[in-house]
Each structure stands twice: as structure tokens, then as C-alpha cells.
Image 1: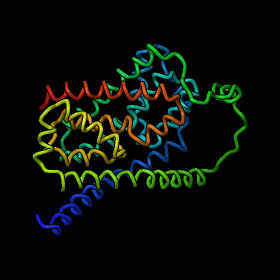
Image 2: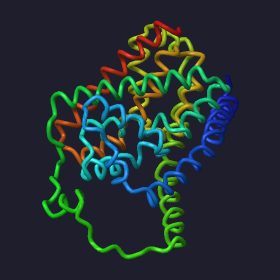
Image 3: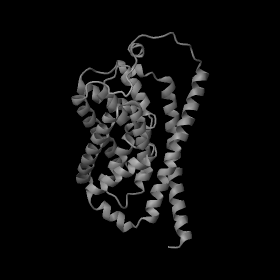
Image 4: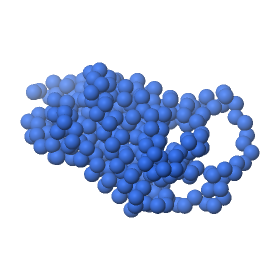
Length: 305
């Protein structure tokens, strides 16, 4: 293959990935902006059951209402926990929110050729992993391991006391929605471009035989896709298009690992977590997500490959 042909192939793959993903990113950041400005986290905290299992399931379900990628989920989770949501339920919400919301699921459906099968696998595995991780945390972590504990006066305000609020006009709120959406789009966009470029380079320069060799072993295939998802740090509204480009060389099980692990934990998300939680808790959280995602992907592989 000549150099010109190689560059042309790289360019074609790269542009097609970006162009397919951008509409879903735009919709996602706009809805995220609306939720950021108009939805109060306290509304969600009030409906949280006290039962450990039910509150975890509720935390998973609330993720469907928040079409936000993992880029902005950590600050929202911190606010929810600060307003009374149990830690395990907040973690369940944080892990499922970027995956099982309608925008991400529909983008997965489109990316995999209008196939609801992969969409259902992604949603089911995400819920299973989030539930397993959150229940483990509920058993062993009793207090929110914030890196900087909430001040007493702030905690009091979070749990009921309210200061007089200045009324904000609807026009101002809509302006804030647009500003939030623009900021999130440019924050997410650079990771999308980087991820698409890395995926395009892999498909162009890495020999297909080598990828097939890696993909031939379910464990190594899933571990490679987990590592790739962590490194390229894609937005969950666009990562399905990258995953779909590997369908010819990787199994359904390993692709499901990529689609679930990346939105739950990646480089940028890890840095955000370290700014909020203690490092030991973040390390344990990453370990739990890795173990349960790998196990789940192997089960998916056994069932569907």
C-alpha cells in the first residue's frame, strides 16, 4: 500500500467516525445543559429509598434521566451525595448515567447498524457492573470518602437549610444552558477527535492479523479494549462509533467491555475523581470496575460470540 493510499484511508476512517458522532454529542451536551440549569439534585435525593438494595437500584435508574457523559457526572454525583444521597447510590448513578441514558443508547443503536442487540448488551452489562460495584461499596465503605470533607455550615445547607435565593429569569437560565453546552462540547470534542484518530491509526497501521491474534483470546481481548477505553477517554455519546469500527477484529464480549468500562472510568474521569475522593477509594473503585467489567464481558462472550 502506497503512502498516499494509506493517508487517504486514515483520513477517510477518521472523518467518518467524527462526522457520525458529532450530532449525538451536540444533542447530549444540550440536554446536559438543560439538566444542569433546571434540575435540582435535591429533588432526586428526596425520593431515595433507605433500603440498601433499593437505593442502589434507584441510583442506577436515575442514570436514565441524566443524558450527560462522564465528563460532567462527577460534580453532579458529589452534589447528590452532599444533599443526602447514600454513597453507594451516588456511585451507582455515576456509573450508569453516562451509559443507559436515551441519547447514548440510541447512538449505540445507530453505530452498530440499527441493531438493538448490542444496545441491550451494553445497557444490561452496565447495570450489572454498576450494581455489583455499588453493593460492594455499600458493604465496606460507610462514610463518603471525600478528599476535603464538606464544611459543617455547607452540610447544614445541603440537608435542608436554605439561603434566600435571587430569582433568575428564564432568559438568563437559557443563556446559561447554552454556555454550559458550549463548554462541555469543546471539552468533550477534543477527546472525541483524539479517540477517533487513535482508532483510525490502529485500523490503518496495525496489521489485521495482529488484531485478530489479540482478539482470539477472550481475556486478552477484553483487557486490551478496557485499556484502550481508559486511554482514549471518549465521550459516551460517541464511543459506540469507535467500538463499531472494531467489529471485524474483536468479539462482542470485548466490545462490550470497551462500551461499559470507558464511560465508567477513563483518564479524565479519574482526575476528576481524585479531586473529589481520597486516592485509596478511587483506586479501589477502579479495581472493582475493572474486575466486574472483565467478568461480565467474558460472560457476554460465552453467551453471544
